[in-house]
Image 1 (spheres, rainbow, N blue to C red):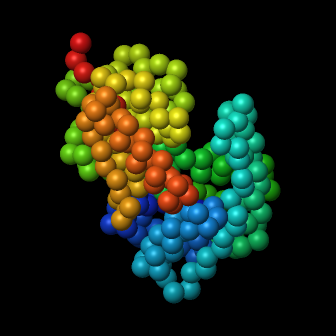
Image 2: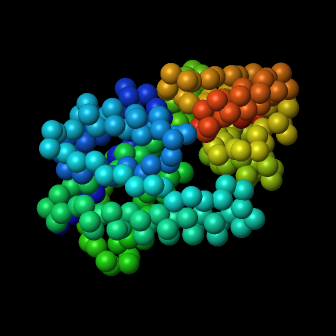
Image 3: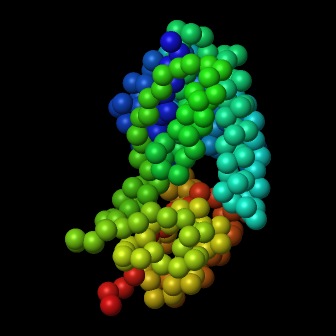
Length: 250
């Protein structure tokens, strides 16, 4: 039976790799890499460094172009469903061609595979189609959320209070009910600017040599974050940022 590992590799620092992840990398026969193009070559480079450092000499690496998708669609959910489907078909073809019945294949996943990542849903879709059979495991990694809080030396929640992880798209529709601490991912529109009195703990490329950190009242540091984010995106061609937004006590 084919086996597949979804391995969380952390937010960008090679030292984020857990012992469980290192062991899984060591028993992998084939690594599957999704190539997002030259502007994100550093993402592939990190994966290849990790593979070289922990894998067995006989391992193989197979890459394929990641399907494109509209980043500003009118129908967000429909666009994501279509993109996941095209991704599933491409990965299924790759597994059929390159993973033998008695082998283990692995995908190295940024952060943690259970947090804002499509890998689990894609493997489930492939299994549901029935064209190929395999077992798979999910190995947790240090998420960008945990890495961000650690870098700012702040807890994610306050005593006796919950926090929520959401997206910029949802935050732009209003502050979530019942929480005063909100972790925001995927915020292309910089929705935090609508909350000038909130305290923000922001980070981009956390754990990498390009790491940028800012914190303070949004009214004081919001413009600086917007400028830093814009400059970094232009320089790298992409940006991976997260922030904790904390509403002041009533």
